Image (cartoon, rainbow, N blue to C red; front, side, top):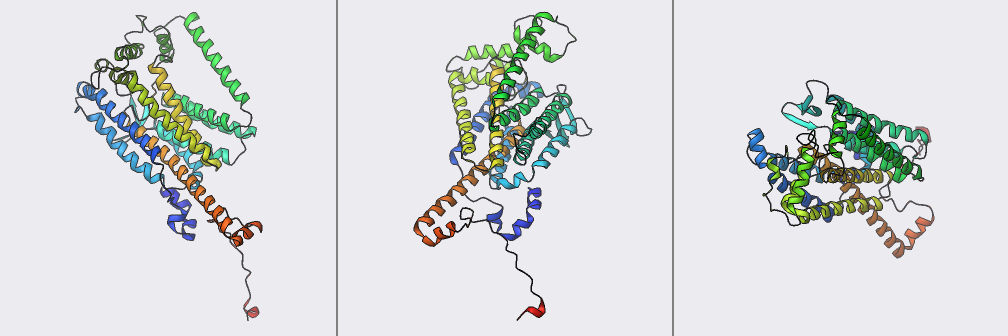
Length: 443
């Protein structure tokens, strides 16, 4: 926020702060309510899934993870509302800084004393007693950075595509090798690829390339399973693929395939209406049931009906985001909204697919439902930027309606428009150069 004020301080002196920097149009209440309901749903399920684990594994209070998530969600909602007041053009000015800060975050996960490891993965930055998972701010930074890059360069230019996929590829590789975070690396590259595919005038080549990559991955999985013998020394990701293909194999069922098989048992146990809130049995066996596999707990306790309700809330939220994208005229804002849309869509689909056993375990959390304070906080910031863009659209719409009314009622206004005045942008003021007059020429 301080950076934004510094960048636009010259403009703030020209016009009132309220009009120049802040938006003052109404909020999209349905958009906000969808986010509220999803977070309330998540808080209830986090408490239900974690109260036993908090006591048995960490000797915490039963509501420890619930309280931690609640604090972050409240802070996130405050940031969500405040950021929705900021005009999108000021985020556009920070696109380079967004990429630089994201790069710094990834590097810091390996630099003491900031580096913090858990379960063999370096995914957090430690600042005193404060832990920050770098995946979420990196996703936000990449969305703003790539949107800015695409605004100032033509997407049809080969150099632009090289820079776009090069930057996103570098971020993905760094996330994979420095923080051992394959899921975030996949999400970052996937959302950029889908963004470019959507906005490019000729998406056929990108679709064919994606189909080719899919075929190569399928063939690689078949080769690993059929022709490469299992070894205890092999990479754990290859072992996860084997466990996904053979979940009941005695070599994997007690370790690599344990979570996925228990999740399927939970889904079968819940049925359509579920066992009841708080009545899950699988949560007493799953390690960290409030994280990646919390959807399995929802299946068991709330049943298919509860998952359908949650899915409806997610679909409605994604529908609102996509409608904002369709109503947005500014290129940077359109790209940001589309980036957020693809980020959430890819992450939700991956989590559902892993829980249902369609994909191997990869550590993908479910937005707002899985426990993770910093993840909820930065995702709410993303949605705050989207809400700000929605409010900007509403302001533009109001100006256009006012112009049409004035044009119909005031013939002088219509005459100004015919003479070439920009009547559709009343806030834009052109500076007029006044020639300087020497003293002796003054009357």
